[in-house]
Length: 144
Image 1: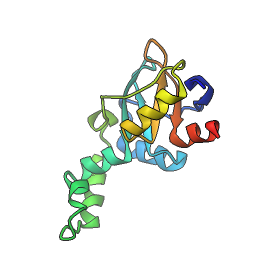
Image 2: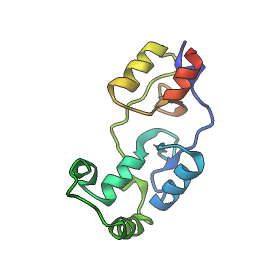
Image 3: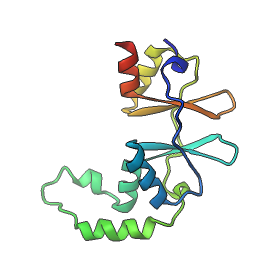
Image 4: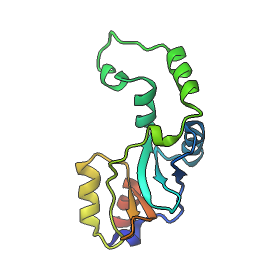
């Protein structure tokens, strides 16, 4: 089965100048943990995830979670998110995007998801335009 047979075509994405507050709202409304970031021509230029936002709000937080002695203040997180809210997603997105093409096979897609510990993969055409997204559950469901 190919990526084009598995991918979702309902594309929730953001542009590079979208404020972080809107990104968080779209993630909550869509139930997605990450969103593709597109330039003005619809070319995939990055991904923004919940993890990226938390890392930016509390640098070192995710690494310190493994220590019982570190208990962050929720006020600290709230303050930092308020500071970040108007800033564009381009300040926080991951620019090293792993993607697949519509003709890529399911085994390659599964390998990419597992190898890179991703929850979803953008599907792009030869020009880099976003044409779909494959979530891990989409792959599992279609293969069942």
